[in-house]
Length: 212
Image 1 (cartoon, helix red, strand yellow):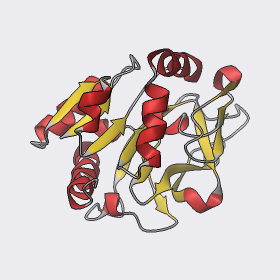
Image 2 (cartoon, rainbow, N blue to C red):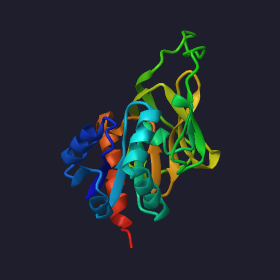
Image 3 (cartoon, rainbow, N blue to C red):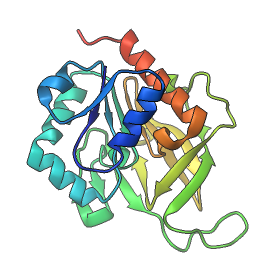
Image 4 (cartoon, helix red, strand yellow):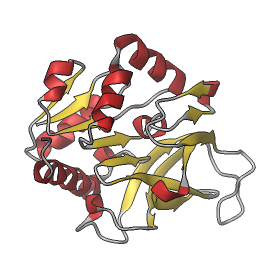
């Protein structure tokens, strides 16, 4: 079973529906006991970093997340969840979870698209990934696949954690992490067949690496 962390941050239901479509057992929950029974944890989210951090801290879910990652169990951060896995966000100028070293920065309005036009903020639409290193989440995903993004801020993790980049006005990190601990800037649950394949690969990884 996959646990989807419930901290009132928006897109848990859409992640649940994507997993159910794949036939993957999943539950949206904030209960530590239920989370502890899961093979893997998904940490999604939409909205503002400050509000999300206040909710996580008030509910104690920030500690659950840190304990989970320190134990080495599989975690997948998505969109806002991806951003606040780092140490600090320019959005609301707030210290975030610090699970991986790095920060979240705002797209600057003076950036331009390839045709010279100013970029629109938020970045909203389909974009491809340029891989820096292989990642088991993307096994069987076509190299030309595109994924759905909606964000006004981008992540800047320490270079050793960068897995893939995307270009929108500038090149930014769109996938980062290490074995069993991944973060995706795009909405994997809204990214069509390629996104579903990523979720299936994550579930397969969780089954192949059971927590001892």
